[in-house]
Image (cartoon, rainbow, N blue to C red; front, side, top):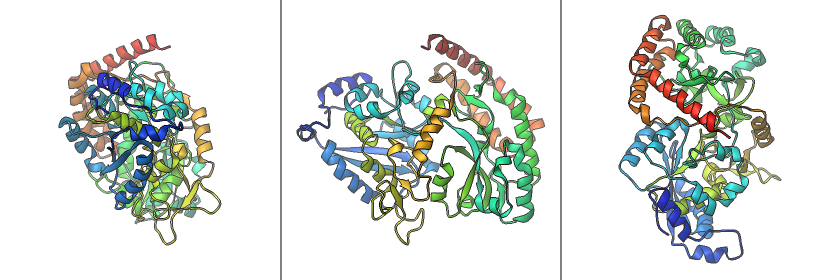
Length: 491
C-alpha cells in the first residue's frame, strides 16, 4: 500500500489496494495487506489502562484489516497547541478528532486533511450504508469531504444542567424556566441558603443561549438570526446580546458567580465536587444521564430552546479526519469504517474492556454497569469520548441511562428544524488577516463581558468599535457574498 499527501495520491493509492469486504475471501484479502499501525488523536484526559484497551482492539483489527491502533489522548488544555505543532511540523499521523469549533475550516484551508470521498467509495461501504445522508451532504464542500461526522444526534438544544439535590431540596419547578432570566430568583435562593454552593458558573459558553447561528465560530462575528432572514449580522450590535451582557453584569454584582469569574474559567473541579448549582450545556435526549456517569452527584437538564435546531455546525461538531501526513490513508479509512460498523471495536474505544472497566447487565447484551466496588471515573478507563467516534447508536447504554435513548435520538433528529443555510461553509481565505485581529480583540473582552466583570454600557460599544476598525464589516460582507452564492447554487 502507498501513502498519500493529498487528493490525487489518495485516489491513485485507493486503486492499488484491495478493498476489504465481508465476502468469504476476506481472509485472503487481509493477508495481502502489510501490517500497519494506525494512530488516532483526540482531546481528553489520558487513561491509565489505554494499553490494555489497545491490545483488545488489536485482536479485532489484525483479523479484519491486519492493523494495530495507537490511541493518543491529549489533555484539553494542551490540545490546540499540540495539534498546531503536529500539523506545522508535518509529523506523520493518521486519524484525528476535529470539529467546526476546533478550527476545522482553518485546518482545511491549510490542507491539513485529505478528501475522504474517494477512500469511502472503496473502503467505507459500511459508512455509506448506515449513515444518514444529511451527515455527508451537509459537510461536503465543493464536492469534497474533509472530515467524517460522528453518527449521533444532528441537532442541538441550548440549556443547562442544575444540581438535582438542590432542585429536590427547594422543590424547584424546572418546567417554569423558559429563558435565562427566569433563573434569577432561583439563584438568589441558592446564594442565600447554600454558602458552599456556587449558584452559577459563568463563562463565555452562555453566549450560545442567544438565538444566533454562527457561520464561522463564536469568535468570528458573522451570524444569522435563527428562524430569521438570511442576512448576516454582527450579534454584538443587537439588542438581545446587549441585554444578555447587562444581565450577566447584574448577576455578578449580586454574587451569583464564582470568585474572579473573568479569570477563574476552569469549572472542572467544583463541578465534579458538586459545588455548582447551574452550568451551561448543549443538550440532547439523555444528556443529563451521560453527565451523571462522570460525576459523583446528579444533575437534571433544562431546555432554554423549545425546538431542536440543525445548523451546519451541528453536523460538524464531532468528526474524524485523516491527516495529509498519513502514511496509509487507506488503512485509516478501514479503521473509520469499522468504528461505524463493529460494535465490539467501538465499545472498546469508548468504554474499555468488558469485565475490567464495565460488566454486562444480566440478560441484556447492550446494557452495562460498573464492576462491583468500582467508582465512576476511577476504573482506569473512562475517557468520556463516546460522542467523538463512529456510530454512537452502536454504543452500549449504562444501566443508569434512559434505555430508550437511541430511539429518542432518532425522534430528536426528526423533530429538529433545519437552517436554510445547511451545508454552507465560510471560506476565510480573503479575510484571514481581519479574522486574526478580530479573534484577538474577542479574546481580550469576552470573558469579562460574559461573566459580568466588564460593564457593558461602557465596554460593549468600545468592543464593537474596535471590531469595526480591524475589519468586522469586511468579514460580514464576505460572508454575505459567499452565502448568497451558495443559496443561488443550492439544489
